[in-house]
Amino acid sequence: MSDSRVREALREFVAERDWDQFHSPENLAKSVVIEAAELLECFQWSSEHEGDRVRDELADVLTYCHLLATKLDLDVDQIVLDKLDKTRSKYPVETARGSSEKYDRLPD
Amino acid sequence: MSDSRVREALREFVAERDWDQFHSPENLAKSVVIEAAELLECFQWSSEHEGDRVRDELADVLTYCHLLATKLDLDVDQIVLDKLDKTRSKYPVETARGSSEKYDRLPD
Amino acid sequence: MSDSRVREALREFVAERDWDQFHSPENLAKSVVIEAAELLECFQWSSEHEGDRVRDELADVLTYCHLLATKLDLDVDQIVLDKLDKTRSKYPVETARGSSEKYDRLPD
Amino acid sequence: MSDSRVREALREFVAERDWDQFHSPENLAKSVVIEAAELLECFQWSSEHEGDRVRDELADVLTYCHLLATKLDLDVDQIVLDKLDKTRSKYPVETARGSSEKYDRLPD
Image (tube, rainbow over all chains, first blue to last red; front, side):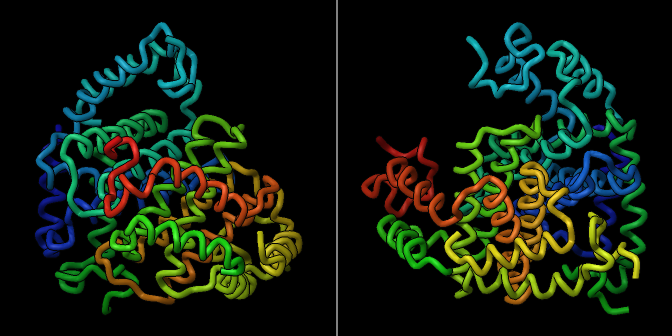
């Protein structure tokens, strides 16, 4: 996690409430998808959305991602950069450009 | 977003592939939940998990969170800190300590 | 479950593979959302979709819903009808007509 | 759909509220995953669950599955049986018995 303010604020928040006991990796993974679905709910019936609600729901997804990363001793920025390297090879610019096809359907 | 390396790397990755055309807030919100479910799949039948797979799937969730935040001009760290302030009031230490109840079920 | 063919076919499928051991209510609930996200993936970048893929993914969601219902001794048709009664009161025709607002935002 | 009572009740419920206008296949797929996550929320912090809540949330998932099936002119029971045939070939009894591995990781 690049910003130690976030990491520290979350650590203190959880410690004060003694909530670490509920934060198994499995429970945090469930929480990420639960919050992600609440984010999607902002767009359930329309592509329009209310900015405030989206901001709060996205923050919830990120919060559980941070808690899971901390639990697994992962750096949230580094894993994004590492995964991007893999994705670059799966989606080379020359074949993937302008296409929303999944990599296994792209031309060789 | 605290780490401008991540933001810049993602911006370049998307621009090279001309993928911004697919990245409406709605499509990105769908993508967040799709990737969150793949993260959960690591724990589908057991609370045990493979570290590498979890790391990659968590990175995918974070990637789409970053793309959505950028699209909506939000700072991923600031919105987490702002939401934490709200959550602190909904879950005061004295009533929430050691409990996994939802705030509307906590004692007054 | 209205159709005993489906219930019986699923029971036999699971029994032959000795998979009931993995089918805790919690694991089945995880599975429902994992498959639901695969269904959504058919619409990730567009509202267009491929019929065959949607059919298979919807079948997967339904399959896990059936397995969870059986595990909890629920009748899939009856619970839908019972819930519909509740939803009718939350969304009375006169206020809900033509609106996609959530019930707590509808006019009194 | 095997039970024409369910199909007819849902058709009438939607028609009375003029909600068909919101029920594109894409919006219904979003709704399935949103409700599936609410079902999972019953198990967010524990494998224990409250029966009533699970029943209602499972009913919501099934309701949107039915609405999507109707919209796409699919029979909810037939697609489950058809998919089961495919799954039987992917998970032959002799290799899949007692294993929760995904089919592409099963021994040949």
